[in-house]
Image (cartoon, rainbow, N blue to C red; front, side, top):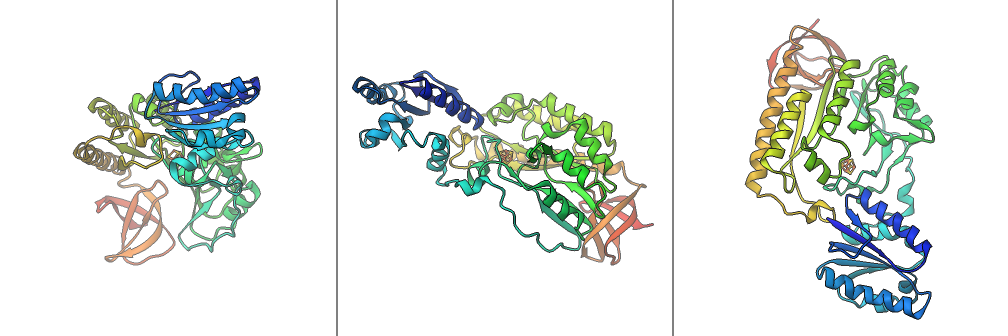
Length: 411
Ligand code: SF4
């Protein structure tokens, strides 16, 4: 999807338009500052002279001639002075002034999605810690997202990324009385408290009494520094959930994901150098708009090379207001069939990974009693079934495949 920011007037308008172009690019738009055919236009107007105002008004007609069905947002000085002249024009869906330019993208987001992000949504909202459950506590350290994956509505709903203070986040993890704490957020990878990042938070909780698991991560956050910090934690669950979404570079680009398949694999390799037995799980979307059979085959091949221990599979679902929603959708049966193939592969990879642990001792944290078994997850996220009723943490030996995991016995 293409967006144009067309500028009239002074250098300041030019600088502000450059910021708008950058913000649109971040949101996954292909951008231009020339009047070329596009889906969305932001017209940054000028009112310094009557002639400049006239040119600003005429620009609407020029845009309509280049792209009769495009949506047009108008900002800048002429729009501030005479908004009614622009508001009545065909194709114009948003008119803001010269004073609100910092907000133009937020207003655009709101106009596209119907959701308005307030200033209050740009600061981390510190809430009281919930009471620790016995088994697994999800500890929130971050909210919002700046990634604007083209299929995702979350950045429009939750606003930009903001993080909880390191001291407060670490205190909740260190005082957690559950058996396991899962460090969670919308985009945990972007965690920042001043100069401190996720690796610093891990170092701050290295003496936690409970098992520490990381929530979903972006591949880019996997660095030797982060992995070394994870190794310092006394009781770290060697399980990394890295969202892949697609193994095709062309699709990743359309998704506005900022890595290639090979770059993603390099991060998986780095994990395995530090944690050879780690579980690496992922999310993949089947049937993204314009995904070809070859793109999908590339995804399957990459998933095999990454040797994921589990794939959370989703069929692409259009979210109104996102950039991808404007792309032509694939036929439902194509999406369904690809989803099915992906789930099959997930089952095979899970069985291969779990097979490596038959005969080995693992530590289960009990989560539920089911059909005469104590059921829970191991440190490397294998679902384990142990006969009889037990609670808390158990050392067990894995025996054989069973249900959606492994049967095990207490040792
Ligand atoms: S998919 Fe995740 S990383 Fe991408 S925009 Fe949505 S919340 Fe952010």
